[in-house]
Each structure stands twice: as C-alpha cells, then as structure tokens.
Length: 400
Image (tube, rainbow, N blue to C red; front, side, top):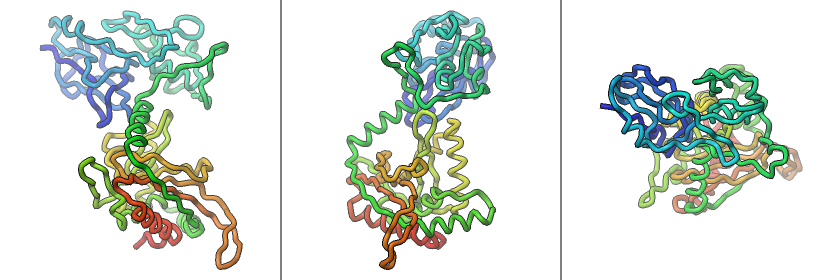
C-alpha cells in the first residue's frame, strides 16, 4: 500500500515549510528513516525522513515549493502499484514567488518542476535559487545548473561569491518590487502580533556604569586562555545571576496560571539573514562565564547557518537583546511570549558624570526592561534592574 509523504511539523511553531532540496529522486529505493528532503522551516533547515519503505514513486512538490503542514509532498509505493489516485488528489503547492515573478511549470519529470524567466532568456531555476541569486547579485546566465533538465538549484549557488546589497533594487522603470515572505519572516510577523497586542507591556530603563566591567573584561582577555569574552557574555552571566534572586521575573504567562522556573534558560537575540532568532542558553545560572561565551558563539553560528535544532531555540524563560554593537543608545524590545520579560541592551558610551562631587568621563550603558504586566509589577521589575545594575558595576559579584 502506498505511503503518503506529507509536510511534517518539524518545529513547534511550524505551519508550512519550503522544500529546499530533494535528497532522494523518483525511482530511488527508500527505507524507513531515510532522509528524503531538506525543508526550510520558520527557524532552520531541517530533514524530512521517510515513514515507509519501497520506491519513491512520485515527488508532488518540487524544490522551492511552500507546502502547508500535513499536505502531500511525495508518494512511496511498490514498483507496479497504481498511485494515480493518490497523486491526483494532492493540492498544488504554493510557489514562493510574489505577484511580480513569472512562474511557469515545465514537466521535467513525474513532478512539474518550476522554471522562471531570467537574464538573457528563459533560464530554468528553482524559486529558492532565484531568490538566492537576487539577494547576492548573481547573474544566473553564467551559472551551470545541475538539477533536472539543467535547472539551477540551491547547491549551484552555494559556492559562488556573494555580492549582497543592503537593499534589493527596484527594476528600472518599475514603481515597486514585491518580495515574498520567507518562513522566518512570516513567523516573526505572527509572533509580534501575538505579543505587542495581547501582552500588556511596560518598560523600565536604568543606566549602568560599565567601567569595572570593561576593566574585568580586559583582564580576562589578556590571559589569552579560552574564548575572548565580550561585553554581551558578561551581561548574559549577570542577567542569569540576577534572575536567580528575582524568580518572579523568570516566568511564563500561561493564561490561567503563571509558571515560575527554578533554572534560568536565557534566550539571546541573534540577527540572521532575513530576520531574528533567539537561541537559548539552557541552565545559564549554572554555567561559568567561559561556558556561556562558548555556547553563545556556537548557537549564533548555527542560527546563521539555519542549523538550530528545535530544542536549541525553544523553552527560554527570559530574553536579552543587544543592539549596542550598532551604536544604538537605547531601545525597547517586544516580549517573546510566553516569556514575561526582556532586557534591551544599548551601546557602551563615554559620558560626563558626577562621581564623588567631581565631573569625570565614565563608560555608561542604558538597559531597558520590557515587562508583561500580568506577571511582573513595576516594583518587581525595578528590583531586578537594581540587582542587575549592582552586579554589572561590581562584576566580582557573579563569582559568588
């Protein structure tokens, strides 16, 4: 009996996935557990495994197609088995292009592969490869395709030097350009709508003297042992320690109850190519500064490569977002539900301040806490910020 291969929910928040690459082709023999395809979810590129065995008889959704969770993408069956009824009942997958794109199916195999108009005539290319080429400024006319029928696919562009521009240009003479949403951008939009509307935000800002942190960081890095420590590493360590003392801020809103956590699982905002993702440092309160520094770098690298596993970006209990490296003095962040709090970190800047009745220049940093008022009251958030500021102004406190 034929086995339907459907788009699986490969992440907790996934509603649809984009087929990046088929690793098995029609006619290939497959067994249970074989990896059939790579799928781009709202968070990462993940693997779609076979749930049956036999021959991959038909690929219903081509590379680059966006398919809703639960919808058919392929069929596994026996060599002489009639699968026409199964294939005929499959809905057409949604293309990734917006209204400004030209999409024309060509029957290159048992599936209708997608072809698109390119520079210098008709160039066969998958939607994902076309988007990559547009983002990187690659001329598809000079690329040799290795896909079915010579179609250009993602792997053909992976090793071509990228020449990205800050903003994709509008075609000459065109009034505008429509860009389809990526999976991660769709999720960001949905999550923001879930947060900024329903969640009653309020914000608390304080300014921190970072002189001692700067001195401590310089001393640690002078040792040249282990990874170089960043200001953000120290901030993450301090926030974890502060949340241990203020467990009321280390919590989730759960509609009919509030869940308070004994350990701190810190979400750290990482900018990726087309959005933002928040890998989680689990049990951050139990980890050394060095361990946190190593883990942040590893998670950030995997996030940018879209290789995070679901358990690496879910389950955070509090978030830290740092835009100081972009010279942002101060900002307010949007809470990531069900978390109840977020700390937005600004740039460290020299400022004239009064110390012991004398005007001096000190390195200062502003932090703003976003609070879910259903969980965190003003005084509760203020006490957390006071502790965080005291620890940063006396970083020896985090070794206790």
